[in-house]
Image (tube, rainbow, N blue to C red; front, side):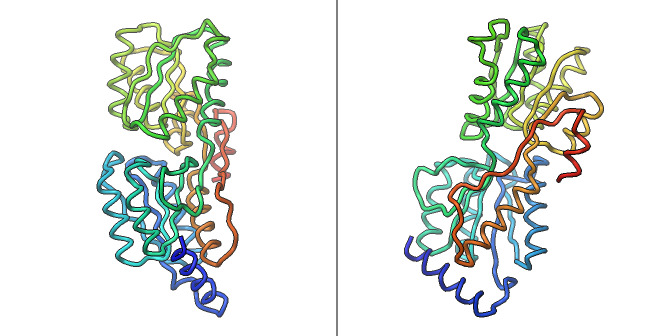
Amino acid sequence: MRRHLVRVSVLSALLAAGASAKDLRIAVVPPGLISPFHVQVDQGAQAACARLKLTLLHPAPPRETDFAEQVRIVEDLITQHVDAISVCAIGNEAIVPAVKKANKAGIPFFIHNSLEPLPAGEVTAYIGYNQRKGARLMGEYAVRLLKGRGKVLILEGIPGYHTRERTAGFREGLDVERNRGIVVVGSQPADWERSKAMAVTENSLQRVPDLTLVFGCSDEMALGAAAAAKAHHRPGMFFLGIDGNPNAIDAIRKGEMTATLGVYPRRMGAMAVETILKALKGRRVPRIVETPMEIVTVANAEAYLKKQ
């Protein structure tokens, strides 16, 4: 931690003395660039770096399940002596050794798209939305859609913070103890992928032909569920997701998907960069930086897109 503080104090002194921010190199590392969500976070970070005249490094693993490659990328950035690193970690336990190496090298470390503290290592700030609260809002919205009665399938991502918080929050919102007409018929992994979500939903439709609503812990999985229902000629179902991706918003406008939790991924990327720069300038930054979110339906889809 001491090396980190010394490095930041030196950088802040140089900036105060007139050194250019363009001399700073920061890294914003996604879990992959398959999901439109992470593409948008990356775009937001790029735009902010261009505006603030920072050099951005943004290497990505080939898949959002490749823990080892993400760690290797971060370790490589440490050897390049970048000035700060922010990571959307595939796994909190897996990223800890890399965080400790960054700490030892005096490189400030940030986490984006997660507010869960790492089990070890020093993190300057966590930037993201409250995932449990957002998923709870989606669960409450599902209750209103179902009018207290229906069969629900939950599509999970890979095990970890994101899946745990979103699944738990959605179940809290459903409150099946109170809304006894609502039954969760399954909660199955689809690993954040549309094709896997489609396969899981197809199997569930065969097992539960009167399935009413599918909640995907990401938009890609919700879109996969919607595609499966369409292929099986199952109109009238509800499909909810989380992310607010452009393709999901387009599906909502076309009536192919019901709603998503819009979490402003471009703004999240920009806020990650802005938080990093504040810290490098020696300014105090909160340990938790919450980013905005809202439920997006056909009624406010256009307005949401304009606020991106």
